[in-house]
Length: 412
Image (cartoon, rainbow, N blue to C red; front, side, top):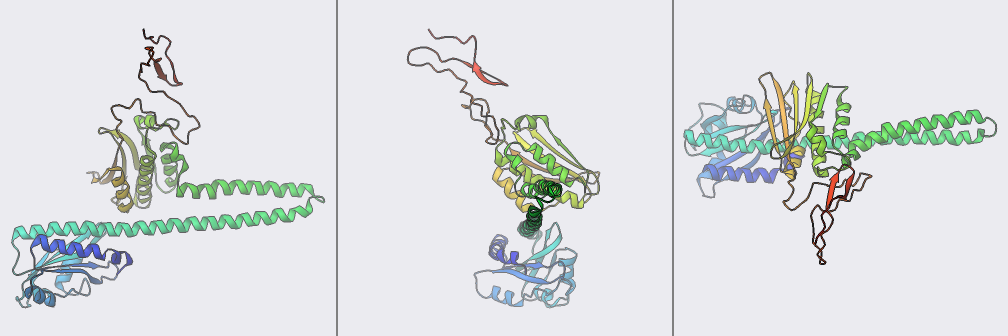
């Protein structure tokens, strides 16, 4: 059992109890299958609080040790079929088993990698069609939890991989800086005897330092946190697409309406929203670069709502990145995610990020960018009558900022 699955043990136990209570079954058993070794293990067991029958049913129930252990296990864990059979027959792995002790209805749990486990319902008799539909619905709910666990595991692995790559890059940078320092230290003794050679060493050190600053340190900082996000998300997305273009052809298009809101000097998009859009695009484009077999199209548009919509379409495998990080960011922004497959075989992922709505009392949206060198000071565009009875000067706003209007009326 993986460590991530152990952390989810309490969640699976609650899920098994919920499935048993909603289904009215005597017991519910949740199991997982390991794709490589086909090992099957029991994650959670929930039994009815009534005495007698659930104890006998739990005693008869046996989770098969492998996904191909018997005919029933192969139907559930390999082929992904729903199995309803006498409990003893399922335990013995033979259709000729005894029909005592009730029935077991085993529904496979699916994720985007295939069959990930099963949810078994232990009942006194064969379930009716309406009960079978309820079992399948509860199994779909359990499948979502399983998929979230797998996505969280992938996200943690990607996080560790990114940290390992950053550490390796910084280690190489540190070694290069030590070599430069050593060369400069040796050239110090040649300063009086051969100034031209020392000048060559200094020039080569300067070129090497520029390369380290731009390629090594700059690339590492961009991966950890793109500082350009503080000003605008559009250039950050362009740099992200350029990073993946050696592996896949990416066409990026940002709607002019979005570009107008994403003004580097007077940005009307919150920085948290810009970062969520960037991280979502980073995950989708990284996955597309690994699996896409053709051109990848990425667009950022503004839709009614209002909302910012990031759409990524590729030809090849279905775009199924680790959704854990994406769903968390969308949840923080109260956004939505939609995955669809078109008739031409292309897959489209659309992430919608709601835009903040200005209040009725607020003036023009003039959110100052803290990273911008300009600090516009826009007085409120409203008139206020002072105590003396003279109206405050009206202001008009243009591209150059705010200035008093020439023909501002005066109070009288």
